Image (cartoon, helix red, strand yellow):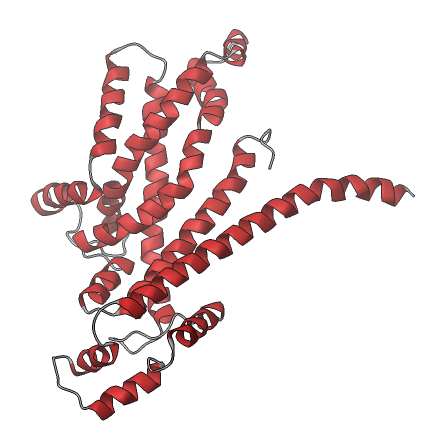
Length: 326
């Protein structure tokens, strides 16, 4: 009898979590299916003969293949089958984790992405952490104040939010790598080589996050619990960091899932600027060579990372503020 009384509330509390998780997983599957359908249409509807494209990529130049050679490639990749059959086979392969084979490298797309994605993820999350640090530093030191420093921080956030990462990366490369020679010109997989690419992505995001956080931060500063904390003798910096920041950070946390997707896509350009290893160089090469399976595979992986990031951000809400319910 006692066991039933104890377990019943636990089961009652677990149902909302399970329902929330089920809804989120269904949404994730639906979005991935939409992205997969989109990539299939890209592969199927782009102009040009895919069989001749594959033959030319293998030869390294433009050739005039015979019809027998074209038919052999079509049979090998299933291009001679009806579009509906190709679509179902494509979805079946994706369900097994098979993203297809690269037209140019004749290697599994999943293996190519797995070999290059780690540097891109390191750059993405380094930029996210740096952007948060900059945004918090500017907000905590300036929000709610009426002096020149507050106005300077506010204007700086606006300027940073409008600057394109590609332009910032070029300026940082010229100034700190070429002229001052403080950092390497090529963004090698070292800590020094990570600094400039990280700042290129983090500075615009820091300006945007800072603007979002500052409005909420200023509002929270006027709440009664802040006055109560100060009356208990807590310092102004302690109040700002321990009490106000936790409440004011929620709008920024909401945007972090979107920011990860934006940073991941922006990392493609930044890796090209700094000649850094990662998905960026692979995507540029694949696009130039019309390596459609590899391009589509990168699109699908990017969509998956974005969805997982949003799923993690939703769970992070309760860590930042346990009062929030699912």
